[in-house]
Image (cartoon, rainbow, N blue to C red; front, side):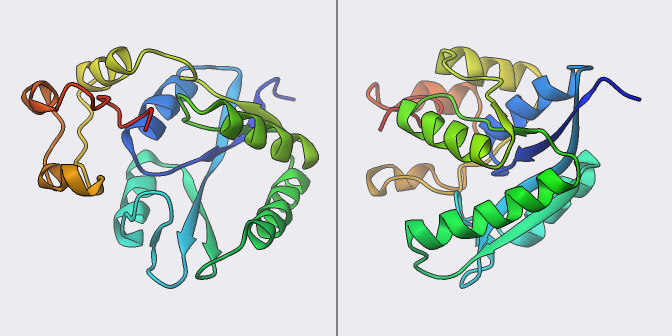
Length: 184
């Protein structure tokens, strides 16, 4: 019998998820069974970042962890979202999953929400990169030779879309822009 905690990783396909998953995969006490992603039914894209499902599936395949896709109806209310996610978390709990992992860095109210919803399904929430300095996060991400492309931004930062995040791009960001896109 393994002492490892069986987990589902809430995967957005983005840099924060990548770095959080990197840390989780270094932890011998955790075993990730699925990468769980919510997908817009209407657009067939990751609901968080707009990433195409075809790319999402390629990511999961290259990582070697099975993708668990949850399709959200267009304009889903918070109530319908919660009901749908509760159904899937209970299903995962019945498979023996005890922990739900997130790549969040900030937003205390979101963290509390995730902890409450995980607990209601009988799971414990884990936040591997929570509260870290975002400059340190992006520097570690780049030092590990991960790459990412900006695929969505606020309208005033739209010229950055399609660009690879590297040291030069970071240095070109306006001072008020957080290097990980946080704190807005």
